[in-house]
Length: 156
Image 1 (cartoon, one colour):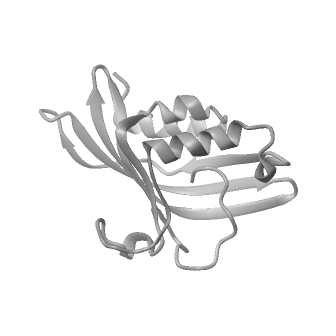
Image 2 (cartoon, rainbow, N blue to C red):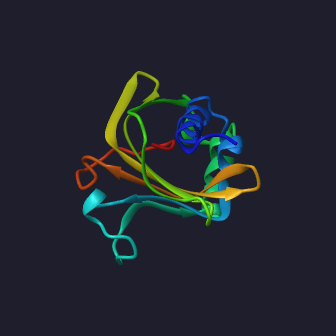
Image 3 (cartoon, rainbow, N blue to C red):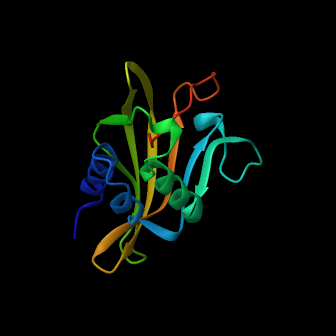
């Protein structure tokens, strides 16, 4: 079984390589991808607007849009690169098969001649599914979350 720390690096690589179906398969059916509007200051469960709050169905729709050759937002195609600091295990329960990791990152998204650079911290809540880890929750706290941001096409 892949170590949780290696799992996070692999997840970022799948996004960078635009292997979105493989990336989506990392999520549990009840998985969630969340980018709070107020970043780390926003408590989970707090009723507040988010930059992204996507369950498995919404993630599937976004992946389908990204793969559609007629998607206007993908002309020219978006590309990205994650630069990760080492992940830290925040909590791990071997008996329950769960692990939570925190990973500071830099994220660069390029479309044509424009580049968007974001910094933040990703928190992954992983659950063991057989001999693999799966994402139950990925929370992305952007450093400048409350500031005006251009459209983010891919997945920081």
